[in-house]
Image 1: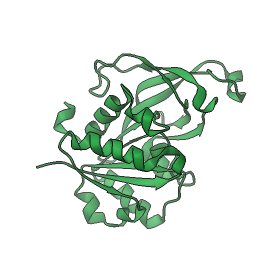
Image 2: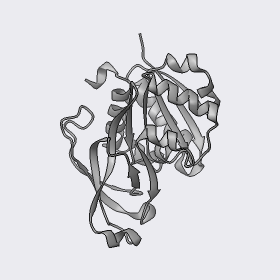
Image 3: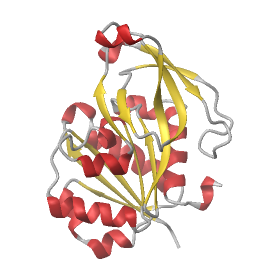
Image 4: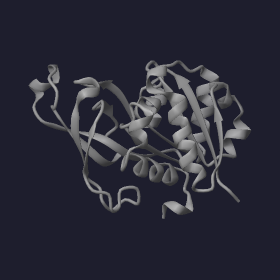
Length: 223
């Protein structure tokens, strides 16, 4: 039986949510997922439908979520449905919602230098099925400075500072770029890359994100 994924897109158009949703949908369908794509958070109100999923992929930046919508999403993940996504579509979704941020394991707070920054992504956990065989790489895009949960299993980091800003006075620091975690019985995967669809589509970002989504869904193809 094919595994089932739900991709929910919306919010700030600058992150190209519909296009990113389509990239993820295509990637999952190549791994034989049945994929539903929705542009409304009301899909989280159907607890029975959510419970039958293997994976939820939020692609929803800088929005608001209702109490009942959030309750449905939290219950699904805590009950064992996987959650995975990237950039602001997952970790800058609902800024006034700490329960959501507690689930995802992080929240965007700044991107010094905006889109013009070239920076290295360094794999720090090479034993995980998501990162196995992937080399360090360089990307030119927003470099996310984040508040992160120390319980996350960090797979990749980037070094700050690269661009100028008030954070420079704190000295050098490694910032998580990619992590996994558990929320109840649900697996959670996140990658901070992906400001636009073109960044999600580039390699090895797409490969890593696809592996991460498969892992979150407990897909057999993830190893």
